Image (tube, rainbow, N blue to C red):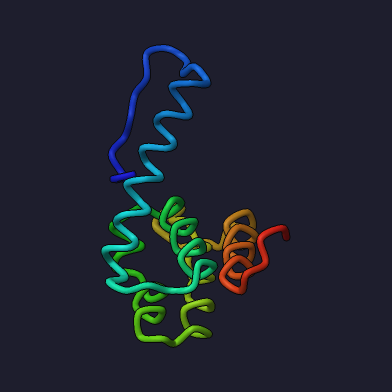
Length: 116
């Protein structure tokens, strides 16, 4: 979750994976709450946690999406989620279809639509 590379000598068991996933999710949950500094709608919080799980704690904490949400600019916050659809390839930012699709699902989640 902190962006550091992890190396594993053997495959993770299902139990180890679940423990690691839950620990990372708990950490991210508290970091997003801390960065927000206030209560928000559950769907807004869920979308920020999902985005943060994918882009990392530091990136979500300093993102336009979270900043606009804190300001109550909900449409701007939702639209800013979509900005995180690129990867750096050969020094250039390139839109990645899979990331665009993921961001669209997070934007729907922001609106309370979870099963899209």
